[in-house]
Structure formats: structure tokens, C-alpha cells
Image (cartoon, rainbow, N blue to C red; front, side, top):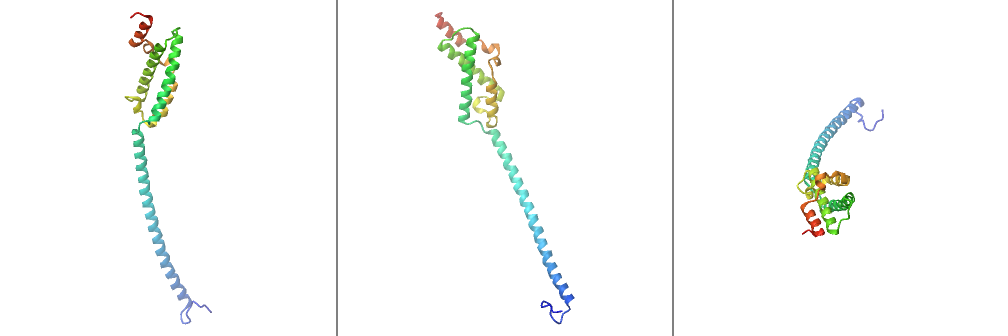
Length: 173
């Protein structure tokens, strides 16, 4: 046999077995290194997942605590003002009368007040500015779902200030 790798005085089979042994040892060491790397990767993955879950929990907690922004507050006020005008006009029709400017403003103010009250009860807050950011869409949808019929009879009775305006306009006082 004319193999350049085999020394002339050695047995070719012995030489091959020694080479395989060296390669086997190197392969075993490589496998051990791969197993260590894999274990390190799994530990790192677990730490990253734990950190990610912690961040998600913190994000959820912060989202629960954040209240609506100034622009969102203005949007709610805009919806309420628009609806208050519609409801005051509807009330005017149902009363079969034409409200003066002051009386219309008083009724509109009454509807604004009642819508704020309904919104606060629905959203379980003490003032509409305390609505949580995550509940903003629900708050808008609630307001937009309100109808004239959503108000109880007691809410549609004139307040003392409205009665005073009526009396002033009739010239009673």
C-alpha cells in the first residue's frame, strides 16, 4: 500500500484506529461545547422571556393607570356638546315650543350635565378626565349610543335655574 499518511514501519490498521480515536476525542469535545452553548442559549432565552413577560406586565399596569390625554378629553367634550345640542332641539320639539337663546343654552347645559353624569357612572370615575386611556373608545361609543330616550323623566324636568329663566322671560319676576 502506498499511503503517504501511513508511516512505513506502522501497521495501517493501527494508524487508522489512532486517527479515528483522535477524531473521536475531538468530536466528543466539540459535542460537549455544543451542549454547553445550547444550555447557555436556553438559559438566555428563559431570561429574555422572563424579562419580556415582566415588561408586558409593567406595560399592562401602566396602561391601566394612564388617563386620557388632553386631545381625547376635547374629543369627549365635542361629542357631548354635539349631542347636547341635538337633545336640546329634540326637547324643544317635544315641548312644542321655541326656546329663547338663554333657555336653549340652559337646556343644553342640562343635557351636558346629565351626559357627564351618565359617563362617569358608566366608566366608574369621579370626573371624565379620569377615564383610563384603555377605556377611551368605550367611552366614546357609550356617548354616541345615547339617545333622547336615554334620559329619565326626572332628568328632563326643568331645574330651578331653567325655571328662573322661564319666569324672567315671561316677566314674572
